[in-house]
Image 1 (cartoon, one colour):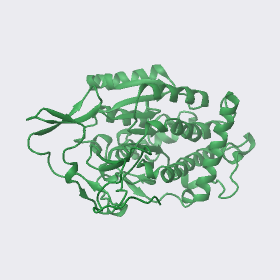
Image 2 (cartoon, helix red, strand yellow; image 1 turned 45 degrees about the horizontal axis):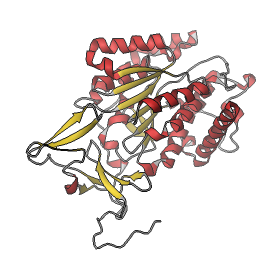
Image 3 (cartoon, helix red, strand yellow; image 1 turned 60 degrees about the vertical axis):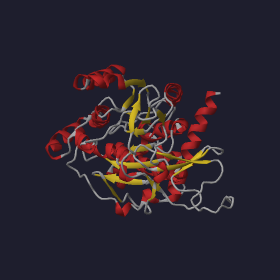
Image 4 (cartoon, one colour; image 1 turned 120 degrees about the horizontal axis):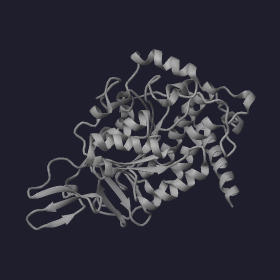
Length: 408
């Protein structure tokens, strides 16, 4: 623990620290020397929130050029990015997930979750946003002012998706753009991350939505089983590559599945052949289950590692057998999905939990939770194994290191 200089005021910030307020009123503490941030006061360990209306004569507006919210004193014409209510912020009670009230359920849609929200100035990067749940997530966020980076493999289908959003909401066209990303290629992930870091300075919502289901046994150009690499390893690599674009306002969302409860990864001695099995050990359904477990394990471990940075990480189940392109690889699953279609969620309902995790104010300061139907629930016992979380992280790091070494 760092010893702080003595002071007569418990609430006084140590040298090098300053307070900032997020758009939703939560106070963040930034250490300018160490370039770190946290949600709790460095002396008291307590959190604060801004409440009430702006002082008389002040107004809040969005600066399109600076891409941030500003405050204007109409009498003096003073402009600042510091909320004038910051000096009157009040301490919050300890954040407790048990105190979060359920506002939405399995019938809620993404647009209902976003009702009344203004997301101008926010940027979302969504993998697999050109179709299915990813498209509805992108469409809903774009309708509320969010800038969307469509991280997809197919340019023509992505441009068609963006065009369909623009037809509904012409102003959204300028806020949506295609960025080529092939998750079956670590080289593509590396190139994509480099381009994104050159074009944007911050990502508010990283939504790792893309995945594959019911694939026959195939290997990627990196020599790994495709389901594992596309659903987990490439997302792992992408997240770490984009780390400099994340701060205390960022939320990272991983789309998992209730299928993660049926995975068979070993708690001890996890090895690459468990994650990327040889053909004779491969079963497409188990490969999917294990990949979805990897999503939850990665979310849990990442939440722990980045907790002090105030970055929230959530994993979720969007819905059972939703009518999307996920079942396109095998006729049996296409038939099964078609049969159950009347009894499953719409794509708008399936996107609701992703949008809720990304934007709900009541989740500020929370991390490492698993959601279903826009509310947190317990993930599988296996996914909560700290040993397995750490083994997966090390193995994933080693696979990335091998790839990077081959590049040189």
